[in-house]
Structures are given as structure tokens and as C-alpha cells.
Length: 305
Image (cartoon, rainbow, N blue to C red):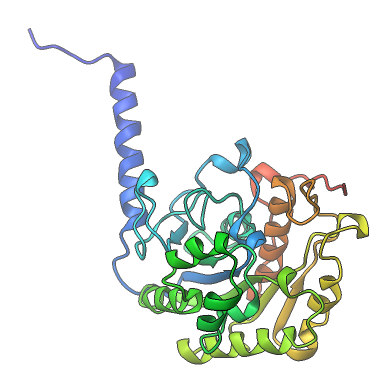
């Protein structure tokens, strides 16, 4: 007499295999796809992600939201330069929730189902904008970077800009770069030359990747405000004024986004809200009506601390 598996066991096996096939499909890019929209994400700690993901952040949004990791993550089976399903942490092992997490989820919820979203993510906590300038990064690493930062920089071969561009060129073989997301400025608060330096980095990216500014804008997130008591509140005006220097820059408001007790980083809810706002701005630029993910369909409660 042949042994038969209980129906519940068979159902569980089918779900398991389906999940494996889904992951394999997400990691396998069969060629260039004009409906694969790619976004480059760079900056310092608030782009790196400083909040521990909460339950709502832990489920995978599925194979329509992909990440090309910049560093290996053996624990999660990720290899640098190979697409995988995007889930926190996006930046590196042991980092946290980033605006890019809910940015990607926002686009998945808002754009047609035949469009996939990919992010390439390079960020270094505390880094000045000159750390993303190829002609200045060597001196920055050798003379300005604090000891605690040097291990992070080594993960990018002491050149975060080149690490980002190398991955971006690889990603371009699979899809179309549609925007650049930045969250940086806290370490350059009060520097009157900051906007000009950001312009140089942005224009260098466009040139190296053969992109047009009108087609690939810069989306710059604003800093923690903490009801006017943010540690780097002086940087807010610098970021607000960025479009005066870069006409294709869009500033993402952080008004009301909640923050951690240090008044320097957002908390998880703040990152979710800010990420959705990045997504809303990109949706409108692309000509789509933004729609919040089902988990956040109701307005996210915001407050200051």
C-alpha cells in the first residue's frame, strides 16, 4: 500500500516551493527590461538607516521590489552586485530601516504591476559630502574620517562614490535609472559651499552614467526637525534651498516625521513616513497618482519629540 502525505503537508510543501520559485525569479534577471525602474540611494546615517525595523517593516514586499546589495550579507544569502528581494536592512548587515524601504513599497503600490523597482544603496553614517567626491575622498579618508567610520569605508574600498557608480553601471544592463535619492547634509551643517558640492556629485553621476538631468532628478530628503530642536536643524534651510543650485532637485519634506531621542535620526515611523514621501514625489514625477501601501493605507500618525 502506498503511503500518502496528509493534505496539510502537501499544501505546506507547495507553499514552500512556490516561495522558493518566487525568490529565484526575483534574483534572476534575464535581460534588459525598460519596465525595471532603478533608483540610486546615497548619503549618511539617515539614508544608511538608524532605526530597528518593526513588525510592519519585516515582511518582504515581493519580487517587484529588488535590491542590488553593495556588500555581501551571508546571513541573508545576499551577494554584492546580485539582485535580490528588497527587505530591511537594505544598506549593509547590522544597519536598520532606511527611507528607501518604504520608498520602494510606495512605488510598488502605486505603479502598474508590470513595473518593477530596483534600488542600489550606498551610505556611510556621518560622512561629509566630500566623501562622495572622487577627487577629495582620498584626503577625507586619510585625514578627516573618524576611526569608527573607517571600517564602513573599507566596505566600499574607501571610495563610496565609485562603489555606487560601479553597481549602477551593472544595474543599467537590466533596467533604466529613473532617479537619485539622497539623504545627506547633517555633517555639513553651516557649510555655505555644500549645495555646490552636491551639484558636483550629482552632475558627476549623470556624466558617468550618461544620464540627462531632466530625466533623472535628484530627490533630497530633509533632516530631523524635532519641533525645531533637531541637532542639525541649521541644515534644513540649506536643503530647502538646494533647488536654487540644482534646478532638477526635489526637496522631500520631513515636517512632522517622528524622531529618535537623539534628535538626529528618525525613528521607524519617521523613516516610513519619509520613505513614502520620497515615493510620492517620484510617483508624481513619473506621472502616476501616489497610493500608500496597504499596511499604511491610513495616514501615518506623526508627532514630534
